[in-house]
Image (cartoon, rainbow, N blue to C red):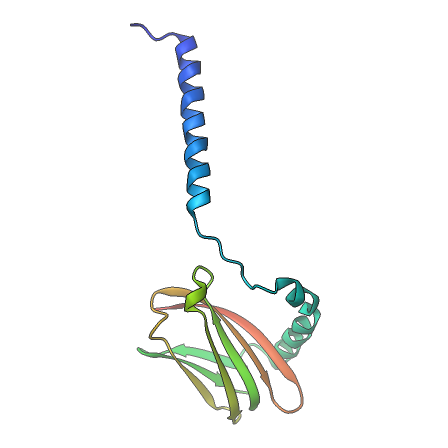
Amino acid sequence: MKIHWGHGIILSFVFFAAFILYMVVHMYQSKVELVDEDYYKLEIEYQKIIDLKQNFNQLGPDALEITQKSDSILIRFKQTPVISGEIHLYVPNDKSADYFTTMQNIPEGGVAGLSKKLLHNRLVRMKIRWDDGKKQYYTEKNIFVN
């Protein structure tokens, strides 16, 4: 049987419909997680985050040093002490792997250490917020934990 242009059009419509059907089924089966459950509240408070980022940017590019050891992540606060603060390790593709910890009384030049036991081979957004007694600071760094 010889295939002429009419058969070609029909075959291309069938392949297109099969592709669309595959994509619909695949999208309904994929897991979608919200970044945060109360993202409306966070959006309203985002101006405060912008101000805290500006405070951090005034410190300069070398205010914070993040290094990875074989079993830990070290954060050195070079220019300010930490009276209180928090570190949130946000894993974009897995909410259950997120990690949250607090910091207190770290002197200027001091180090905060985090275990990376649960974070191997992942892209992590590190959100660091701290208070030195005079100002509050906030920064986000994307790191690949290996």
